[in-house]
Image (cartoon, rainbow, N blue to C red; front, side, top):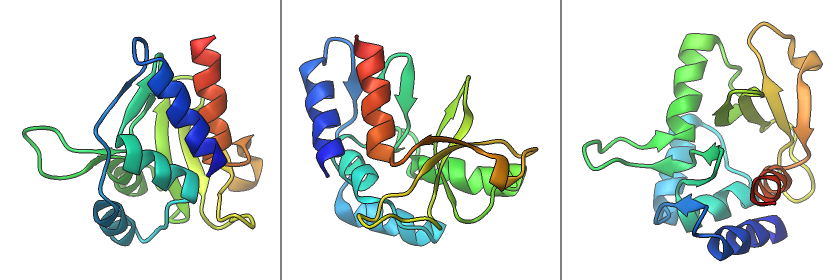
Length: 152
């Protein structure tokens, strides 16, 4: 949870540059997890509950959100379900962003650590899972590093 608190503090201290939504209720998060058949790690859940979606330009963290016109949740859940159908994304991967440099950034939910966090990988449908680029040990560490880099 330390990572999440640090990211929240950093985003809130830089609201002139960073942008965020209003957050998601825990029951919305739980429903989304059930729909995908995956559990969010604590750091991701905390940030989604706080912001829903957020960005520290140029990095956008889609999280979970709804637009005024759409009732369906967008963001990670939509990316995950779409990428399963269109790109053959393995079921254990949770998409946390689409990035111009890294491609599809995923959490590997089959590899939880002692805190329930998942490692972060850059996934490419043409690369074997064993050859994926490991980006960070947890979503919290990944997000904090991205935010610090973008705000420095």
